[in-house]
Length: 409
Image (cartoon, rainbow, N blue to C red; front, side, top):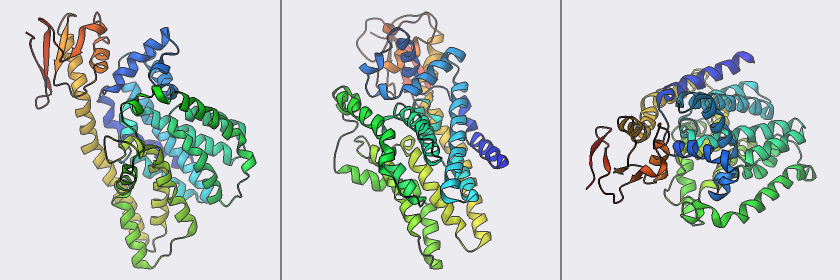
């Protein structure tokens, strides 16, 4: 068993190893600034709702910043190892629920390399997803082993990693039913109580929630389109391939497999009312991926041909590893470049008033947070392209990945 877990750990680390030199990206800088604000004003996150429901992320950022400053590599190491731990937890959970350690082991390996939710691992500001799923899986594991008090504490930690963890109230009874255990609804009071208190707090702060106020999320019929498109993107092409083989072999779907598969769209429900896209962002498919991959693994293991089973597993692992290294890593490097280049550019100048034109993240908090990471620079000295007399002007050139420097007139 320990060899299988060590293999999952190794594969997860190998898959995400290229991220170690990516640097901080966009909102990472804002969080790095806010952890310092929290030292002065412990209730500050209540002014930037829903960040007050991401406390575990801020705790991790604060600790790592205290230990390592603005060195991004240790932050990535932490999140990669957390992802590896989630993969191991998934293997344990699936093994216990299905009574099949081989299925659990392959499910964990699949999650270790699956590229669909990679943003949750390689964008540090999306660490709330890996933390949330970590505590959700701990809640499930404690609950299934009859340790309800520990499950309740883990559930509270999940809720304050990301508010979407509330979906566990629906998922957990369905997982128990899938396991073949009758659900004793009275036992759920220990989870229902923190869920209700959390829900009341969430509703009371809804008017201050900037994601709602700015229209990032809103109830809309578009939610169904987002759900179906996101499901398609998640399972393409592997889920379709296995289904096609099942049909050709006349393999009947079991009720248990269907019930588990229904958990995947259920896990997406907290995100489907996003308004700025018709797909759920990759980071927010992390839990759905953890639920989809055991279905895929079970499907592959059910195929008649051993050679085909081994070939599919090898193809899945190889494709995702190569895609992660060759495509996803370069995408994240490109996303980090506007801020990493800004750090290098500002280092060459003494602190002064600066304006930035063509910045790819049109939120002034980001360049300001970048500036104060450098000695002597103040928050008020750096801004986006707003009027300024004789300011240093930095104009971002995406093609060269550098800033052109001139004086603003």
